[in-house]
Length: 344
Figure 1 (tube, rainbow, N blue to C red):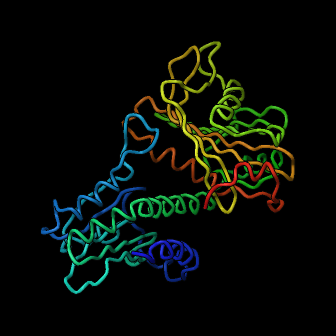
Figure 2: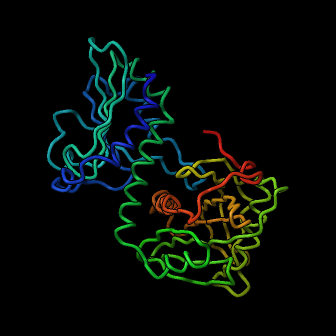
């Protein structure tokens, strides 16, 4: 459906600008982040259209072990969309009609509850549903991911950790919203900061660091990991002489992305403790700050002795924190900036 990309961009704009007074009086939505209810009639069950959507939503997350699906799904019939399920945070509706000339995807926000997103996927038959879902699988995942991260951001901005956010602003000259529960663990000089949210059965941590800008730097994955390891060594483990490093069991992967108009390199992999037995997934963000002639890195990691509790949502909450970053000065162009400019 040739207008879907435009629709996707417009959806976020409308979500940001929609009448907040109208949403204010909606009941609270139900379900956990990245939970999806698929609404489909019996005749579409186990058909190409339904299977295509199910496969998109249950694709394994990148760099998470043991594997976790992109989203958790529950499938119901149209006559079951009532009560609690009608207020679910994410609803995908599969619909077919012989009168549908062109397959299309539409989006409604906060129709029965808030926050809520309802995605309508319409086609002439199951094969036409499968076709548009296959063509737009990346956009469908992006839509759900960005919507949930925006919800994380909205919640974080309502419940910030003021002292830690002030420390970040003073050390790095940026604004970043860290939610309540995170505590400062260590700060060294003016270029290294480590803080984390410790829970009974898991931990979410972030360490931030800067180093001088070098216009000859290639910003390849190997270079990023070498620098990550040098700063990660400042994070001690529980055993004497233990410290954080990058696991070589899985090769890290990097890609260029845009966050709020700014180019970053996103690197994913697994961390471990040298001389100890802890580890988990991490995601690291690198950007050039030419105004201050430096490179800024925000490295986020998750630990849980019970991976079955889910790394996915813990990691995505951390990823949402990076969406709150803003630099005090406007971003200017430069050769180093160009070296990591992401494709739009």
